[in-house]
Structure formats: C-alpha cells, structure tokens
Image 1 (tube, rainbow, N blue to C red):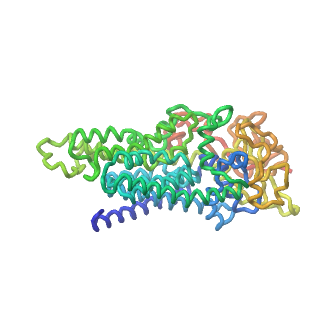
Image 2: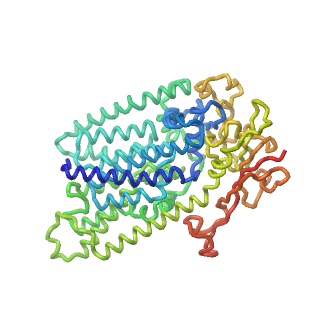
Image 3: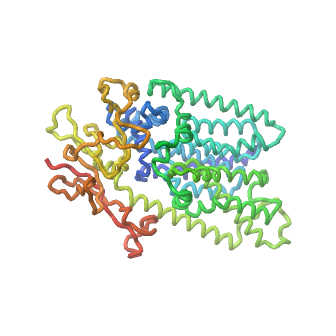
Length: 594
C-alpha cells in the first residue's frame, strides 16, 4: 500500500495525465478528419445508424447477415447510446467520438498513474508524452472499433498487472477487464493476459494469497464477466438475428477454423511479415524502436548495476521483463498471420508506449551507471538522478525527434486525406431537398471507386439515398438493410429486418453486380479525379455537359506521389523542391445536369 502522501501523489498524477490526455483526445475527436478504415464505417457506424434512424438506408455487410452472424448487435447497441440522444446526424459522430476520447484518456491515465506508482516516476512522464503525441494513439483512441474497445480494457488490466504484489483483488480485476474485452470487444484480445496468468497462477509462489486463492478469484471474475456481458450479448443477438448464437465464438471459428476453400480472412488481402514493423514506425517512429529494445535495455541496466534496476525497489528483474512480453507477444502473433490490418495492433498501443518508456529509462540509468566512477556507487538502493550531460542530450534528442516526426506525420494525414470527410460533412450533409420535389420521392447520391471513403449515413440527409456505381473493384460490396426479394422491408420492424438474409451477400468476397445503378439515375455523385480515367471509372468531373461541380477539395494522389517528404511526413509546400513528392488530385461532389 502507498503511504497517504504517496497516495495523494498518485492521484495527482492521474488527474494531471487525465487532463492532458483529454485535451488532446477531444481535439482529435473533433479535428482528426481522416477515414482510415472502411470497416469502421460499414461494420460499425452503419449498423449504429440503422438502430437510431427510422429508415433502412444503411449499408449491411455480409458479416451481419444471419447466415454468417460474426458481428454482434450488442456492440452496435452499446455505441448507439450517444447517437440516440443526438439523432442520425453528423453531431452524433462528433459526440460519440468525444465520449470515446474521455474513455481512452481515463484508461491511459490509469496506466500512467500505475507506472508512476509501481515502475518509474521518470518513466511515467515518458509514457504520458508518448500517449499524448504518438500518431498511432491519435488515430486509435477515438476509433469506433472492437480493437479500440479492447484497447481501453486491456490497458486497465495492464495497469493492474504493473502492481508487483500478488492479491486476489489484482487477479480479479485483470481477469474481469480481459474477459469483458474478449466478450464485448475482440475475442483475440485475451492473448495479452497470457503472461499474467502464467505468472500469477503458475510461477509466482507467494504464499499469501496462495495460488489456489488467486485461481478461485480468477474463476469468480470470469463467471461474473460471463453473466454481466456474455448473457446480455447473446440475448440481444437472439433478438436481432432470430436465433441463439454466441458471436464471439463465431468470430474465432471463422478466423481460425473456417479458413481455406476460398473463404476466411486471407481472401481480403495479405501483407508481408514486416508489415507491422513499417506500420509501427509510421505510427510511433522512435518510440516503436525503443519498445522493441525494451528487454535488451532492461538487461543492460541490470548488468551495469546488478543490485538495482531503474524502477521502484519493489519490482524484480523478472517482473520488469515480464511486463514487456504482452506487446511483443501480440506483435509476434499478428505478424505471423497473412492477413494484416493496422487496427489489429490497436489493442497493445498503450503497452507499446509503456515498453518504450521502460527502454528509455533503463537505458539512461545504464548510461549514468557506466559514466559514474566506481567509487561513487556506494549507495545502490537509490536510483541515480539522470542529470549527466550525455543523458540530457539523449533526452533532448529522443523528445525532439519523436515530437517532430509525430507532428509532421499527423499533419500529413490531415492535410493529405481529410478531403473526403470535409466534402461529406460540409457539403453533402447540408444538401436541401428541391422545392419542386414530389412527395415521397428521394434524390440519389452515388459513389463508385470512392466507396471505401464513404463516412456513413450519419452524413447523408434524410431525403437522399446512397447507391453504388460499378468501378474497377471486383470484390463484394455491402447490401442495403432489407435487401431481400422475399419481403418488403417497409412492413417490418427493425429486428425483423435484421433477421432477413440479404440477396447476394457471401463469405467468398464474390462481387454481386445486382446492387449497382447507372450513373444517369444519380442526382449527385461523389468522386475523385487524378487525371486518368477508364471505361468503368471515367473522369466524371470533366463531363461538363452532364455534371456540375458543387464542391472540390484536393486530396493526395497516392499512386503518383513519391518519397517520404510530404507524402509520409508533412513539410511546407515548395520548401524542399523536387524532394517533395506530393501529387494532388481532386475530391468532388457533383450534381447531374438535368
């Protein structure tokens, strides 16, 4: 237990971290206008829109078809609470992301205060810096994804794991948080708890509480989580799908046992083994490199000062090393999978930052010890202050490099890719119905090759329906809720619509051409133009006899842009001449000329 003074300091650290994180996260929720993952839109925002709106306009993916049922309606229902208050509007998206900013800030502040209390005071400030400024945290913290939800809970569990003293309370909290993450968020997130369970139930022989007591606490926490989370989830999915189903189990079976024969996650694309190494550097730059070096740095510090590690004296070498394993284990597991996506790593982003903070503090401690004369090392129980000139320079180098690369990466993402969301939020969402519009008719907004940057029906006015145009893409695109030839969805209740099996949806990513419409049936069209067209993807913006330009914003042409400057890390335009490899296109809202 902390002393009263120590307790007050830990609480103060939590409050300071929460305030700093909250400011940054709310700003990200409001201004980080980048659509980075179409799965977030079609698998989560669209079902949420369906729940809170009175229409069937939303897109339905094959995962929500009763035939496959590998997405839980309970998760969408949880995230529908805020939109129910604000309605099916852009404001619902902003409000939801603001709430997520608060949740993420609180969970990360808990980790910072636990680091301050149990590991390293200096390390807690490094951790706070990384959590605030890393581009990866900016993108992940307010994302509407199961992996982000699991990130919140596994961070709380990891904060408990930092406590080096075994207790039934610590065991219960870790198991409960992890079980909630598995049952409500992402089933695979349970892997991060493996190191703790091995240590707590098999390795740690502390007699009080005994392993048996801790095992019983773990079982009780797991059963409580099942009753609190799995039972409601199963009931909600029973209502929405029309039959009993355990969706978390279905997700595992699909991804692990049902792969092959033209189905499974690999059909949606594969990446090389080093994908997450490149992605990690883009999202965390030097912090990612430091996280990979955490274990060598801890060992180096131990070798240079065997009797003390630059962490609190209550933490042993073995336990310090074990805290680095969850991040590395997760990285290894998902690097071994052929199908890779950036969001899969969200779960361990805060743990990555913790490992980096550990690496830097132990490396600086080792450097101090190496530079300190042997005769001066008479007191080995106290951590030595990091005040030497080399350590000061190292601190300045790491901090300036991290902040420079993080800021320019975040600015690059915003300036290069914010056009789609700006077009929808500023221009599409404000479209008004024509005064001469006959009753019960709608206008049509069409999207072709830009389907993957559609931000959801929260940005679409009620009088407009969204339809798809044929493009060069040959995979399966979402259907509309209620797209069934067997029944008229207008006569059904919401839960009756979700029980329908939409026409054309399949688990093989095979294209269904029946959902495409002709361009001349569209009132509006959202499209990008990069100076090159084809038969299936013509340059609509240049068809001036057919389309008027309502609004255009520039967007980065990924195919033609080259190099790092500008494309990957933001630089002022013209400053580096030809080294600036950015090539721009246009992202436009067009209106058909009648």
